[in-house]
Amino acid sequence: MKSRMGLLSLVWCAVLCGCQTGQRSSSESVPEGTPAFELRLASAQAMAGWKEMPVRGGGTLLVCPQPLLTPSQISKAAFGKNDGDSLILNVREGSRGTLQAISGEHMKKPIVFLIDGQAVYMAVLGMPLSRQVSIRVGPDGITEAEAKYCLQAVKDAGR
Image (cartoon, rainbow, N blue to C red; front, side, top):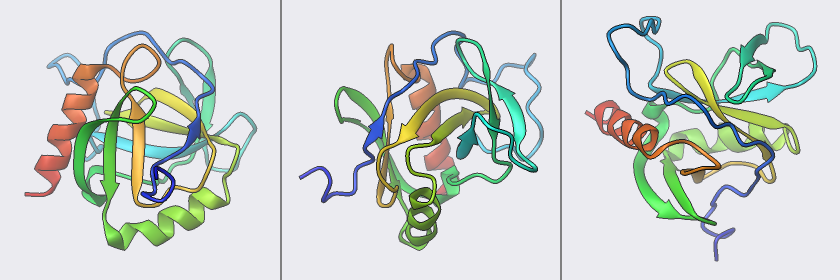
């Protein structure tokens, strides 16, 4: 049972297609210490301290300055099936409680998946996050190259 396994159930509300990120090039400027990927809370309304950020496909969202999730909080990542192709991120046990509490307070509001500091995917929370986070891969999500980049970032963080 998917809900029992703690899979992320998101109501996909926006297709953020466009430029391909997830692979750093020598011409890109990514601030030192920026995680390869992050999951952050977002809002369309003004929030104190939140930064306005462009999203793929146009428009902007206000994004929380603190990440909910980074590669160091992931124990395992893999390609999987969850209503299509997905990047499945298994959350480390020590990070699950905080993730569940914070995401539970942000229900029916947007979250943003960032790669190298760029918003590449946005969804609305349908249930609190806990054990697993599923990010759609393909036309309605991140690219396969971005997913592979995230898989490598999790491997690198585990070293």
